[in-house]
Length: 395
Ligand SMILES: [Ca+2]
Ligand SMILES: [Ca+2]
Ligand SMILES: [Ca+2]
Image 1 (cartoon, protein in one colour):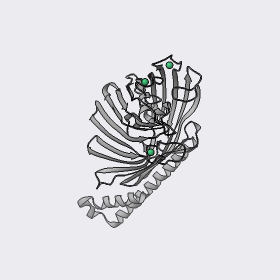
Image 2: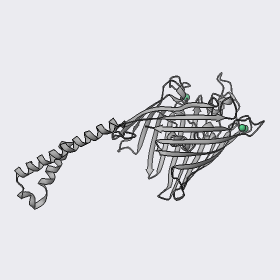
Image 3: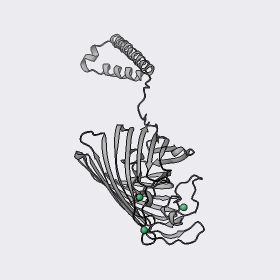
Image 4: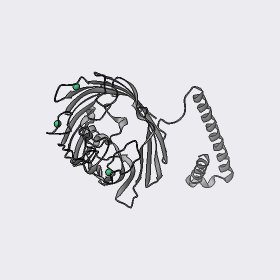
């Protein structure tokens, strides 16, 4: 660093125009020496300041250390829940209590200008450490598209692709959580950006989702995902984004909603349309989505056919960054889902959620809280409304 600085100043001194010819070599050397002393003095002061800081318990490092080549980071998400009932919460966790909802570490970076990678491990809720992301992206300038391969988020739902660190409410809409493939899978994805703000994605994935056993294409069949994503408007005052996704092929994920009805594998014909509208002058962001799946060839674990109806669902959400404190956002959401239309009503629900988040230090240190009114649309209701509070730390 210092040598580069000195070389630069030598060039500057040597190139200061007509006057430069009158400067003798001796004078240049003297100036360099003076400069060298100043740099040494600065370095000394820098060391002293760092020492002082560390003595006072501070470390001198950026919050999320980033270099061109390597970025190391992670997060801890602490959660407390209070449910009306004693059993499981509407999200499947045991009711009432504290948990470490997310504990994650990642390394990402560039191998060169064309090749990026990311590896993330997690130990959510204290589960054994497991691989959660492991992918390479190769996007050389001579190709009109980039290729992503490995273990990554199924690139379908706008809600799911939004980073979990920037969610307005503790969980994604129930319609998305139940119908969209909100899990990781292994495969290859092509992505191209033919116009500014427009992105097309096509992926071939195992369709076996992710589970705690090894990641393989256990049924030998594939799932296919296509998505179009467009930022139709993006300026200082407004933002409008739309994403349309389709999943076909065989989905055999252990997290399929159809496992509620005994089907472990289906052919998907899923359409997911989601949009986000921001009115930045008012701190308002609206989101909405509609999902529809027509599953065919549903099979139980023994290979027997299972008769399923269509799955349908939607959500609307508003996020308001309050004018009296821009760190405080108020959020409301309504989400409706029928995972088995015209066949089974036992899981037809709608959830109405109110909440807030407070960005103490951006998303790096944030609080979230929400209350969900969980409504079972058929049969006798269950007392299962849920209060959730969260503290998030990114590093
Ligand atoms: Ca498969
Ligand atoms: Ca139903
Ligand atoms: Ca209820």
